[in-house]
Image 1 (spheres, rainbow, N blue to C red):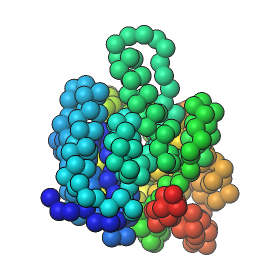
Image 2: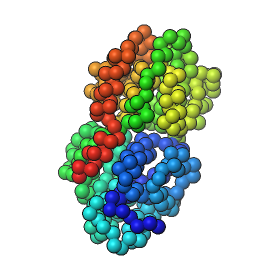
Image 3: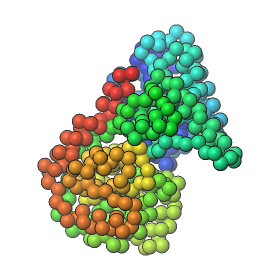
Image 4: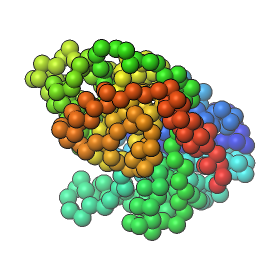
Length: 375
């Protein structure tokens, strides 16, 4: 293994790189690695070995060290921390002056201890869709979850800085766990999305809808969109991009409603494929019961003329001033009413330009990198 350079960052991420259930955490991790590589850092990623590794990670010019994955997440955390310890020990004469570690998950506390001993700068990043909470209903599963949560919270609370994906998460951590070391670094949008030129699809007779996100009904009530489709005027196709634990439930729902020709499940898409399908669609619709940021909302605001969003996180505060973006309650009635009314709205290139300028100024991965590097 090569010697680490002065500019080195190690990312630790406990959930692996499997394309099954690909979500916001992996998106953030991938984007940060890309940004640090652009800045000529030597980048290491330590993560459990999983099948079906996301294609974009395979093409990164960073060092990926796979720890062992166990059925027990506690053992998986221990294995990841051991791999981190072994990596550090391979470089006994390490120059720590411009060297840092950024942990995302419950291995954080163990990595923190190692970094304290080795005098290495240690940071954490909280990208969860909501603040994790301890469960006081005692059973074996909850005990394990509580242990993992406590390990992350201890690691985060005593890190040099705990970076948050939004002010919403930052304020919740302050209120619930009395954190003092927080910094909101926001989130970014891929440069390909920011430089995308909106395609004029207004003349199409059929209305195509697009959903991008995890297929997990507890958080994302996509079934409400499917239940609404029969009442959407001039519906063409409903494209569903993403994966998750409830895909089979949604497939069965589509089959029972005989909507197989209308609802197209695309699986996980890379950036180029997301752009390809956004060109086919007049409206993106993203539903969620809770979020800390909702990366896909910002991405779709850069790609699709019209956007229908659940009123979660700070989305309404950020986007309500822009034409072509509407907010819904998570109900079939509201989805039907809003999508049908959005079809009548005309969005000019000037309107789109104002929206794109806002995104370019506030939400790039270069800005996230700059915020992290302040500390």
